[in-house]
Image 1: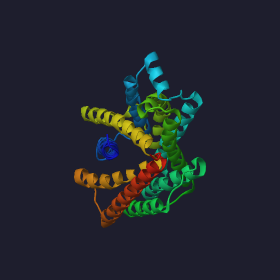
Image 2 (image 1 turned 90 degrees about the vertical axis):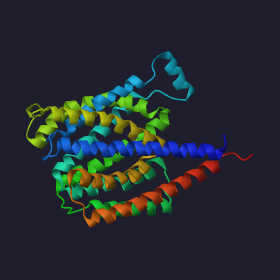
Image 3 (image 1 turned 30 degrees about the vertical axis):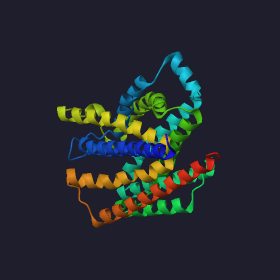
Image 4 (image 1 turned 45 degrees about the vertical axis):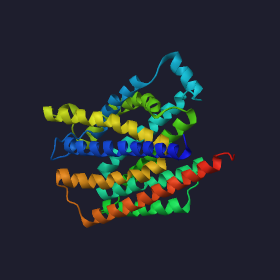
Length: 324
């Protein structure tokens, strides 16, 4: 097979991975808007819902090869057993991310919450540069700046700050950035697949979220999950949310493992733009000129980032390729 054909197949596969994560992420947001919205089914128990998502995501363990043959196959690929300490550390960081994001949404104005999420891009970049020796070119930095500017215009409103809300938001930014970096690093360091890593972490995440979630949600909402009045419609939307969560988690781990946490953050912001569009289309959520102009700028920045990242990846591959 020629190098050009191989590169074309790789590009198609990469595009399919991003498309899978994009479609599943936008779909689950739309389902959760109906499930959790005050004008919808008012299921307010966000952390418990995350626990249910990971409980369902445990199903990926059934897809993992098992037994001696599987161990030999993993060893042949250079895979190593993931240490229990690192697995538990990952679960602790990921659980902190989910809990702090929910607390941040409660303690902060929506504008400051969106600003904090936007700051995950430079946070991921700084962590990778400081601790993992990653080099970010000026071209990529400019593209990141354009994306942040566009998303900022589209999403930011009033950014009222308060002390505890700011502390929790900072924890959310750092823990979420660290969690996404760990997804990439653990797959690379131990030569394990995205589904394998997800299959190992999902049971522990489900245990952590379902243990802490109901009590945290009670503090945040003033009611316990057993107080919720279930209907056939709410069960249907909850089931849809859990099924989509399996797809979201699989595609997210796959994208981060294939590319990087930084690329996932930058390109992932196109989902924010389309969430505005589908929110307007399905739920009559008003869209302002700020949303439209900011969304167009963000898409332009993401396109530029993808182009630069692709060129740098090709140049790096050519540099590593031995001369004939």
